[in-house]
Length: 367
Image (cartoon, rainbow, N blue to C red; front, top):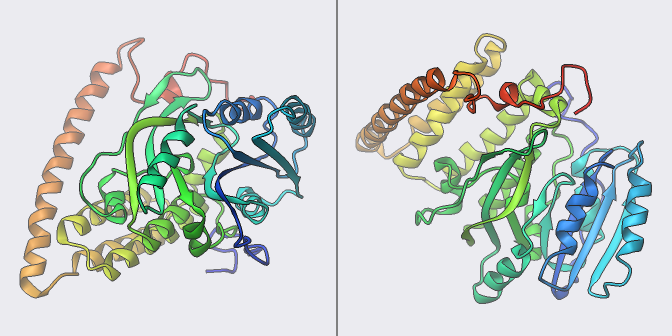
């Protein structure tokens, strides 16, 4: 799995790890960036506008070749007067976002850690609200709702908000109450250290891998059912292309395997395993034509979960829950198909925003 043939870069993680000492009550926001001169200031401003203090902002420039270094220097100079906003800018050779995040962690001093991609945004009250939860509970991480918006035209695409299901967070991931997006989580430093570095060998789906490891390390997570972050979508076709390539599906398979192993180790109930089985089988069908060998491996993951349980009765329970979810999934697909027919009318196509966006750049043009 480390020879580079599965989409994973053999460079691995950097030597050493984050320091144990920290400043109590301090939040470290880590922002990796690469060639984001047009967007990074907006993300940094969302940190500077936080109603919470003190904040340590660690920016890691991953070898930008555009005007990003000059933009960062100017912005940092403008913020020099805020005594409770400590800004540090690191620069490294082009190594990827995971190496940049690990470098930010190694330079951090906060009791709490917030990861922020350089095109995403924090709600001004986010850190105030999450730190309040940390102080009132013994939780290891806090996760919130977020708004996904089109990076080209700005239209809101979706607004997922976590619901209180009573399920452990690891199992809520299977149900769709938790999403694999970096900005959704704020994490206590102690659990960040135990989860380990971001996996720099993954080309894509690094956030999925990190999230599965985080939720597997601790069930002590608390949800805030409010939108406290925004995630920019669809402005980098390059990343989208990789996700649906062989490399992308190999990286997704890695995270899916971790998820399967976690469900088996926890002896998760049949209703949870049935959800994961459905997801793995859907992926298997999607990749069967271009990548039949990967389709078989996703099918094997599904089978290993479906066959789990306590003897005959355990398997019967799994089949019961599986039949319910298949019926519900079929209903949703039917309704979705009807909506697509209706929304295919001019000016009403919001199902496939990538093609409906009135400001979508032409193929080959810069977004």
